[in-house]
Image (cartoon, rainbow, N blue to C red; front, side, top):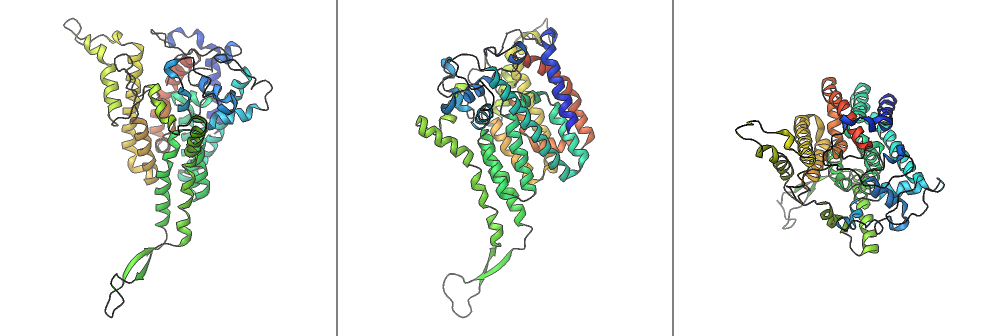
Length: 436
């Protein structure tokens, strides 16, 4: 486990040092770059990009968690409510031992360098722990060779950058893997607790009630169901035939009780929003600030491909029967790649269906429903990236990664191209460009 983690993080460090000179690696004609204030020296500030700004402001601004402080952009006013609180709270707790990390900054000012360092340490530590748990999970299911391949896949996937960035991805992965590990070992209360922590880290965590129920139901099938005789309605007269009802041991029904823990991560956040802001559902309403709307699961893929390729289609003519790919702008390329990521990995999920098991299948279904049913549809002609951030969300598609790792051929088919795309993504990230 240590080798893929070490090599992949050294690769990110090398990109941090050298990527500003990789001019060819960062084509960005529309200059779509993060506008985050620079933090500390030039090397450290390369990791304070995009959503990292939101998490760091939430971590640095105390009890209000930054929700009322980052309002310079009227379009994104209150946009921080979309980010769940457990990761920034963890960073804040860890920052209490770092001198100066939590010193107040003026609204709109740069984050303290110490706080950014703490956020990076928390993210990388959570990722290392998640890989340990992933190795244990995969090794118990299919052996150490599969476990090693699963770790390599997550360390080399292009958006593995976010496991080392000040994002909640690594912490969510930790709770997710521990949740499935607890289910495999029939540790129901531990699974419920990990589900609650996942739900406090990202909204997808609340959907873990579905694989929990499936795992519990499968566990009950290992016990003989007793047919308990009972009298039919209508009396006890002679000749009345008793009917039967299914009875489970009381200890098995107790296994279903910890499921109530899982929604508590979300409920706790909603209680805070109600008490502090008067609206427990503001985290859902604020999705409009990010251009997201509820839609059928195929809308994001279809519209993303259609509108991303519109400039290319319009360039097709008698003199250029194949069109001009140069007509695609940077938002067009983003929309195209996001839709292709979703299409390819949705197809892989279909191929893996029979090998996932019912617990994995149930999680895959809720994952794709959550991911696909909230596309960005604010202005498709100017912003055709309907499935924005999908490459990053795929990091949490755990049953698929475990299925890919069960075959050396499948692992190589994904890992080899992933390595080269990772170089490209890492170079773009440290230069402030968008990658997901």
